[in-house]
Length: 173
Image (cartoon, rainbow, N blue to C red; front, side, top):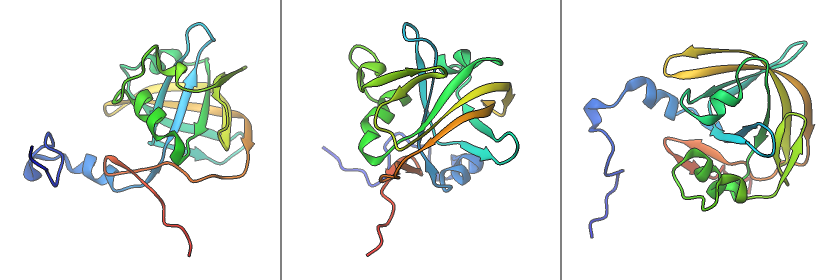
């Protein structure tokens, strides 16, 4: 067995996409976007998102255009954005399609159906949004949603993604 200091399937240093490398250096809180009814839910972990303050405030998220979520969030539909905590990293991997989910990803947690879609029980912050527009941006689909309702609880330890890995934020001493 060989132990690699880097990912064994990564492109060689000189062949790596500089834009992707820049994006990888921007820490991102990992969110789970979900949509759909109880009998046909869709979801995807996303770290490329932002909230645009305004009246109304907007959620802007980049999703994989080939994902089930992209179809579920077509213009005029609704969705849920929920911020994941460190404890949710296995669930995040399953929704990203990089870890197994026997029986489906929605069997990995406890869920409550909201008017916007499935909500993972126990998250510290979530919002329901209505999709105003979707369009292709680069190799992603930009979802522009109006934030309809926001719920903020006590923040836990956030799940943060940086350079292809989850990292624990530094804790104050």
